[in-house]
Length: 294
Image (tube, rainbow, N blue to C red; front, side, top):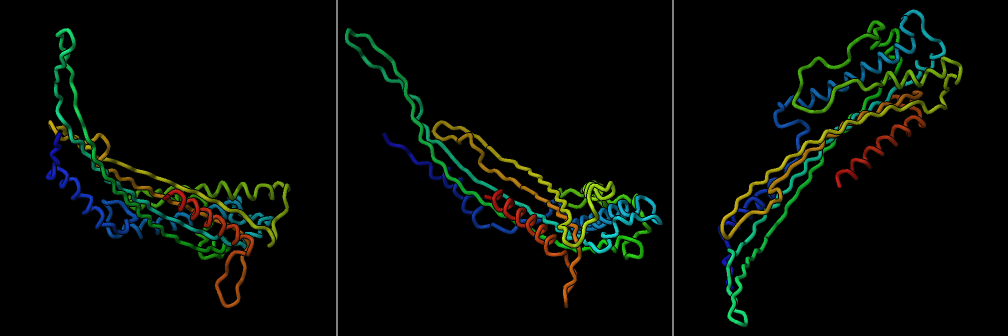
């Protein structure tokens, strides 16, 4: 039996493989409908929102809603700072899996048995071909800020008149991104941290205390595929997706409060214990990100 190899059809499937392997580029943080300004607008909005939330949370627990009646048991907050890290990453995956099947049309054969009777049998043959090409590109950006909590209290540059009722969610129009700009619930975590101090269950912390860390992670995944099918007498495609693509967007916010350490000849930072706690959160985020991309 001679099988005719469909050179033309196979070349049509091989061509996209060659083209796809030559155009790998770094992905954009924003979506395809975004403008050139949307990425920096998004980062600015998130940083401004976290700044606002930290300020309102610190003022609310310290002043208990009354700007002229601070809670003296929380005076340690004046010597503390907040280390803030924003991690944005996108993971773009794509796969090309062309496949076809060479079919031999069904044939009927007649067999004569002893005694003169005949039996009709049918047979067909198919030979499948397939190929695969996949790519994955991960882009990640880390933004860090440090805020002395005294800036959010009276006489501080971000006191904001003692307000605790401001809507922190950005009023800027939706940029070309699916990253979330929403309440981080930092205030709930800070209130839970200082509550045992207010009730006398725990003493006010000193500089040896690590502090507190609040972490929040959003993960948004979209995917799609194309599965064209056609069938001729001798050639047909397979039922597996010809092309598939997915995009995983990760946004993580890490906020650590702790005593401020003054560094000779350099800017202030968190004390060693609090800084180590914050660094461990960043390291854990990097390890999880590396594993999820494999």
